[in-house]
Amino acid sequence: MDGNILFAFGLTLFAGLATGIGSLLAFFTKRTNTKFLSIALGFSAGVMIYVSLIEIFVKAKDELVLELGLNNGYWVTIAGFFGGMLLIALIDHFIPEMGNPHEVKSVEDVNTGPTNDEYARLKKMGMFTALAIAIHNFPEGIATFTSALQDPTLGVAIAIAVAIHNIPEGIAVAVPIFFATGNRKQAFKLSFLSGLAEPVGAIVAFLILMPFLNGIMFGIIFAAVAGIMVFISIDELLPAAREYDEAHLSVYGMMAGMAVMAISLVLVV
Image (tube, rainbow, N blue to C red):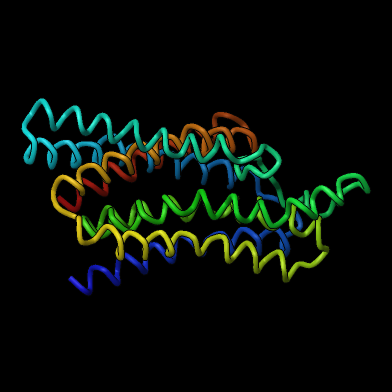
C-alpha cells in the first residue's frame, strides 16, 4: 500500500511540474509550434473524455451500485459526475477573466511587451494569474492521486493527459508575470510553484480523504473526477487547441487520444 501511495504521489508531482515546461518553452523557443500544440491539446482532451466516460464513470457506477444498490448507486454516480462539473465551473466563475488560465497565450506574446497602461494592471495581476492556475490544478491533483491509488494504469494515463494540458498553462502563468516584472527567473519560479498545487492536492487527498476512502467515497470521487475532466476538456482543451491552429488538427489529435486510450485499456485487461 505504501508503494502505491508513493507511486500515486509521484505521478501527481510529474503532472504538476509540467507547468514549468510551459514557462521554459515561453523563454527558450523563438516561436510556438502551433500545429504540435493543437494536436497535443486535442490528444489530451481525447484521452480525458474517453477515459472519463468509458472507464472512470463506469468504475464509479459499479462501485456505488455494489454499495448502494442499482437505483441509488446510479443516481449518486450521476450526482457525483455533475457535481464535479459544477465544482470546476464555480472555480472558473470566481476567477476574473484577465486572470483566467483558459485565456490562450503563445510564446510570441513574451516578446510583444505591454503598453504603459497595461503594465500597472499586469503587475497587480501577475501573482493572481499564478494563483488562478494553482486553484485549477488543486482538484486535478486530487483526481490524479485518487485515480492512481485505485488503478495505477489509469493513473498513468490521467497523469500524462494532465501534464500535456499543463504545458500551455505554464505559458499562461509565465507570460503575464514576465510582462509585469521583466524577470524571466521570477516568472519561471511562479509558474513552477503554481504547478505544485497538484501534489499539494494529492497530499490533502492523502491526509484528509484517506481515512474515509471506502467503496462509497471512492465511487463519489471517481464520478466527480470524470465530471471535472470532461468539463476541462470541453471548456479548456478543445477551445485552446482550435485557437492555436486549424480545427481539424485538434479533432485528429482528439481521435488519436481516444484511440490510444481505448487500445491501452484493452491491452491491460
